[in-house]
Length: 585
Image (cartoon, rainbow, N blue to C red; front, side, top):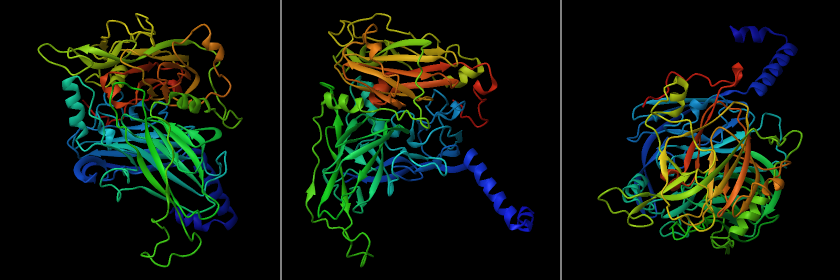
């Protein structure tokens, strides 16, 4: 019937109607449906095969593409033997916390044989984000890109690239990662490190038996490519560089930044970075490594100190048809150049790089940093210990202790019921307490000589803030078990990084140096090794929101907490009710 009516319209009216429909779709966005089936798949890397958890049998998982304003409806069906939940990392989830995904925070996990539909709208965001499993260590293999394009007709605030390419960094274990972390928790020790780093799931030619498993980016001379970099590694911050090529940073964590050009960048787990890579103007007669290696100041802790490489190749005859598939237009016998990466503990490089990040702060893309503060918090974040259980021998810092981690001396214990549902139903008694400390209960010299007692408390405590509060949070790294950085991710919000420094935060003098003009806006920020970082955000999203270190070992040990943002007074300031298919614990 609708087709008959449309076809009967005069041509001019039909065109006008179609234009109106297109404008409505552009403003309101469209609904995009995805089916994610969580299954086991056999994958071979480093000359060994193992069964891993995947989505739709793919490793890395499928790419999600949407536009700003679109609604995403993603049905996740669990066919694996592990409980699963998925997190859409960096999505604001305005009033839709039920779709955020961290297990036992906003939902119970999806059990074997069950399904759950993640339903949310992308509001006021565009750029590179990603999705990953958010239970135990399953994100070791369960992750993929989430690309949000600008609204139709809205250009990038930089020259449009010839092509856009997702580049996802990961880690690969020969062992089952669930066994790795289970063993570490039983022993109270640090977990065994990964056997390789990967680019788009491939370890590359610098590892044994892996030359055939090498990611290759094939480019045309004179063209500009946008690399959508994503660090999905479990435990390693990474330096990244392309030999003999510069990279222009244009976006981090799906927020545009003032462009700047570097030879090498740093990307922490959880972070995304869009860079423009300008190919050489003519065929160079060479190939180039795209390399990533870890940044770590942790001592004496072990980590995967290996380098992953992909290969940047140039088309020899970019405008001519290939003579045949066998002849090819790429020459692997050419010289192969390697980049020089910083030393693995080059903290000064990291500080200089992060200092370059600035919001665009233009009328179209303003930096809406809160200028006033309603709630101030000071969180000490770092490692500590738990006593070894009775009649056991531990392999922690001593044989009588096991590794732990905490925020304000509280090592967060995951509940057995989801926090968000407990809050929404008013059945929070015995699940959590709303008394997370606003500052360390026993202040100490955070980056100096450690206290004699390194033990931390345990609990499930939430920080409660009213809707609409302007929040300032200073996160202070500690040196209790060595100095290292912590990439902290806040669910449900972007925040502005208004200040950072080394040593102990000075509440008298440091605030005067805060950048309230064009601070970078992120969802994951590194607390500097032996230093502090200050962030501000507007608490305009009601619900329960996880905040945790994106080094999975630290999160497992308890370097995590949750915020409870109360409902506002107006209807659009209140958490929506849970969907009918919300998984049950």
